[in-house]
Length: 427
Image (cartoon, rainbow, N blue to C red; front, side, top):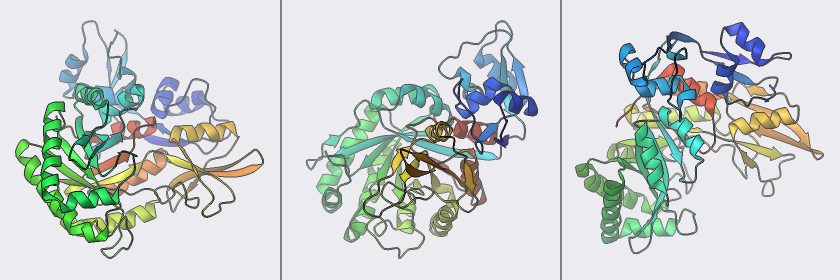
């Protein structure tokens, strides 16, 4: 696998010829449309097969997989043109393995709302260990606020051996995290029993394999109550065969102040649950000043603290699948950045004739442009920034990564995973 940085005069045809690949493969791996203009500074992933099978009459994906000692899902990962259309024809060439081999096996998790575009979901699922469906909440009676339409996502996940996880949080009817509602839950054992029993029954009925606890903005005085709630969840869920995981704010020390951080006690929560997700993103955010969403130097600080308190085999590191577009100058309390997908960011750079640059400290791409007389700056993710984040998980031997979220296409990311990592499948 190689990364090519586009230079002036480059075309897909010239890049394909240089590396001995095809224009079609470059388009597929990088999520490029047929008429897309390349941008100076744009990073392109170039995957290089080491084993290629030419389809013969009578071949099936199952027979090909058996012949080479791989799985059908491996073939889908390596040949994304097959996703959603598994019909193969004689003469078709399928990549079985890539040059360089796999670095290691990792666990991958992706969050999605039931409203996700089905083609986007289909493109991502083969590369995921877990699909975390966002989100279930609860009423003050203990009845659940369900993620409407999750049944179809669960069924699609099982088609490619991806395990569905129910995300449970303190989101109320308005869709916001409710500190007060969480507090009531943590202080009422009867309510906890009702909620957790309802959750377990729903999970059994729908086919979930576990629950992910996403409780944010917990009052500091409820820290112990939250820990006891997690213990109660484990007591109810594990005998039924379910896993319990928890999402953690990106702390760099035990004493970190703020409503987002104080109730998330890394060593205690890490000792209770099966997995944790470090929410290592949102340094650059909607109302904040322009900067990378997940600058690697800052992410490293969180990971370094996390591994000092939690076993590395329990830790998933968060990876953002989005960026932001800020109108300049930034005014604190006034400015509001536009959330933008990574592939859409490159299209915007092409539209305005911008040149993409790369910040070596943050290990993130960015560009500037002018529109309607206003200067803009866009920070986003590309194959380089994701490669750097994955390398950080390798360095600390973490369990893997969790993507917030998979609602937008990010084909480079999936191509990178296929070329470099074995994706753990648990179902």
